[in-house]
Image 1 (cartoon, rainbow, N blue to C red):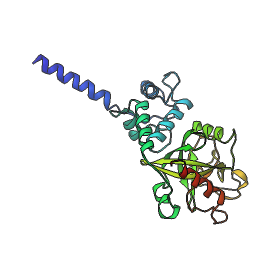
Image 2: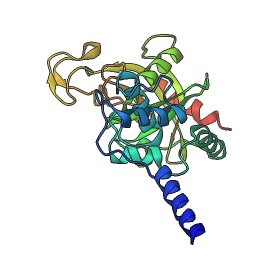
Image 3: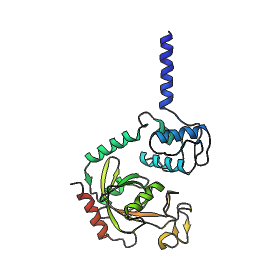
Image 4: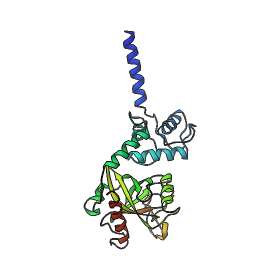
Amino acid sequence: MRRSKLLIFFLVITLSLTSVTFADTLKYGSRGAEVTKLQEQLKKMGYFSGKATGYFGSMTKAAVRKFQASKGIAVDGIVGKQTSKFLFESGTSSRSAASRTAAASSKEAKIEMLDWWKEANKVFSIGTTAKVTDVETGKSFMIVRTYGGNHADCEAATLEDSKIIKSIWGGSWSWSRRPIIIETDGRRLAASMAAMPHAGVDSQPANKILDKRSQGYGRGYNLDKVKNNGMDGVFDVHFLNSRTHGTNRVDANHQKAVKKAAASGK
């Protein structure tokens, strides 16, 4: 009888450790023991390097956004039911193990050069968060596709991702095209990216009509959905046969970079 009670006790403890959720939604400005628990878990998983203070500040928000981007869920820096579930579900406590699994899968998957109009536009649909690897440097970062019809208009998932992007392009934003590999849903796609945010203002609400937008873009909708990520607006990601929005034509330099990305896997 005593042995049975002990077994039940340990089962309850085990379940409580693998299915932790928060009573309230945690966001910037929250305080208390649950924030401390959140910070400790993020630190354990490798997303948070600060001290667990119990205050949900900018560092904690950035860590949450990074975690959300890596899991392919909405990147808003707020810990609700979905984010809480991913944080504490069984088997997600080790980021390094997950990274090794993802890396192994990526090596096995071939690089696909998908036609934008036939398939790429659907595989990398609006709202998709994906990992990007620069072909020439091997550096990786996370992006979110937020707009675009002729090609994918994207934003850096977090401030840290913006910093990585700028470091790849020589320390500043640039229109120069670079071959990249986009990883989404277990597939690796050949693409080209120009790292120049445009047509948006980070401090203004998404889709609001503004008189002035970044990079000299005049009156129009604010193309900036991902906030506090260190960039104003969106940057261009092109695929095979995609077109520019301004000219509605295929950009030869983007196409050259796409083909270089595809060839990098051979």
